[in-house]
Image 1: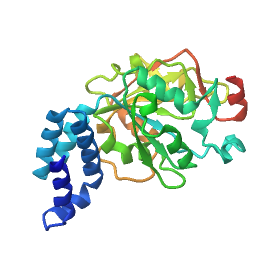
Image 2: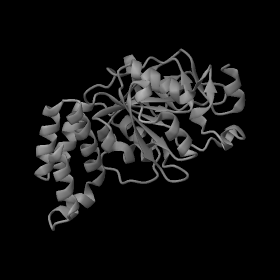
Image 3: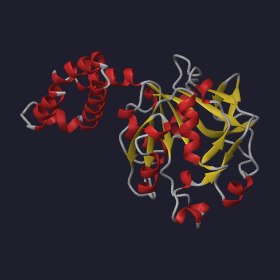
Length: 288
């Protein structure tokens, strides 16, 4: 542990070599140091020492890769939305904390992701963020590790939120909208991303409130348009390559996905089980 402290002190002193390194990689450094401390305590010192050596040499990107590889499957739960259509319920309660069948929506996601082996989760927060932070904590009571990604008021849209959290995510990672309810099995999602693909999307038959759908599905490839359109569930598996060269800021996901579709690098599947976009009070009540 003294080596970790020494590394942080060296970087913090701000020598002429370390100042730009610290300025450009503060998020990466924070992730590395946090995980090194954990691994040191948990006696997984081989990983800690390997990452530490790279970081001491100024190779923070390589050290971060060691951290990512050892973290296990990761997932992103999007929970920063305002929930305007759910008012007055969301005036005091963030939408992911609304209760469906005895549990907050976000708890359903956390537990189902955990049961599928996703033990490293990132939750983004903005509206009523302290309520969400207090509820999920560090994830230990759910049997996972949760990192919080705080966003400005108004949030960053889906792609912007993912870009901000990239240092906390692995090479491939699941994403689920915090305001949907579904019985989709995340176990099957983990093996769905082919080597050259950048995304795998879960689609459903169009619900009454969205009759036009979002995308087509042809031979397990998602296309921008087709004779029969389906609705995107907000559940997907992504490769970090899709977001790696993007600048931070507000950014929608759909344009990135359509670029991937044009290159035939987005696969998909049709889920015919339970799924609901909990976007209105009426839909919340319908779930019981």
